[in-house]
Length: 488
Image 1 (cartoon, rainbow, N blue to C red):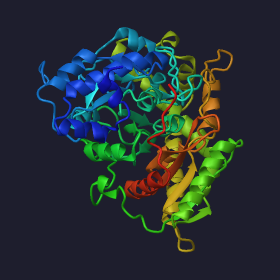
Image 2 (cartoon, one colour; image 1 turned 90 degrees about the vertical axis):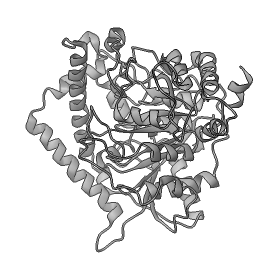
Image 3 (cartoon, helix red, strand yellow; image 1 turned 45 degrees about the vertical axis):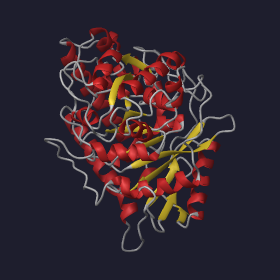
């Protein structure tokens, strides 16, 4: 590996941007260093499945009709987009689906967020692997094959932003795009020892093709909190036609780094709210973090929203998830210009779409109404009542288990929904906050004895990313993680 590729491998995006700003490195040099790392290391991971290196070189150089590289906060930093919904003009988007991969239809335009990534000065070199339509908490699509975890290649990096997390954890790029409809930023962040912030619903536009009433949000995975926060500042805000818009912060989020959060009232949950036992390492991670927060001066007690213990939530969430899959396949058919068949789609996703056809419009409306009641009930725990004060934060394990092994979510013709049933046990703590719309972050605060990362999730009240950032910054200083390196 060249000197620059090695020297910049573990620099975060902020430091890499500073090199460019000081004139010590040209954006094309940073990009070539990242490309060298991808070509050398990624065969062990299969994280970067779609590559447009020549185009990226033109962008970094400001030639080929791309115009000068924008002078944003991340000017010249190499970047990767997740292969899910994030259209980039002129490039392939497969959504992890083999029919879309084979059709190789280039996107006609950028999404609004991709345009903001460009304006921030990021240089996108390709796409990272995602499970088909982002439906599983692992990254093993039939279209592209499995992505492997840099901490142990027998294990999954999680999903659905697993390719992004593996690429960042292995030092291929310092930061990468990620999205989260049921935990898909936080899950791979936990599995790969990264920072993964799910912003509040409506904090970052999903325009122009998707809507903020959807369960999903988008941002990134990174190795340092400051990278995530600086990118949040660069891309936050509504787009044209948005109807769900999070309240604007009082000041830039970067100003919350190192700011005193005061003495907060924090609840923690270390067990599955209504299901099977949580792995001891995941429970230990939550308890240890609660103890650390108490030592930092916060009031900490065992408490969590009662609504999380209602198994009816999982059924309603599953109904919405399946219906979204049905809608997603309709969009695929529109892109392909033909009907989608069972041969075009992985079995578990086809089964979900078929399952959704059993629902009437009234059934779907009832699920939406139930989700509204759930959201209000969950958020009440933060707001408090006349009889009991509310809480500032909730601490949970990010996942119910350490990273799973490759193959645990394989399609089973005799049980088409088996991968989804397995997923429900694994992701006990993340989907609730997609339904509630609240900001949540996974921090790499624990490792198992055999060296696998275990994330801890912190959840704040709706719109209060500022509180999350202040406390996450406290924890990053008290228990630093950025210098930990995977063995790959």
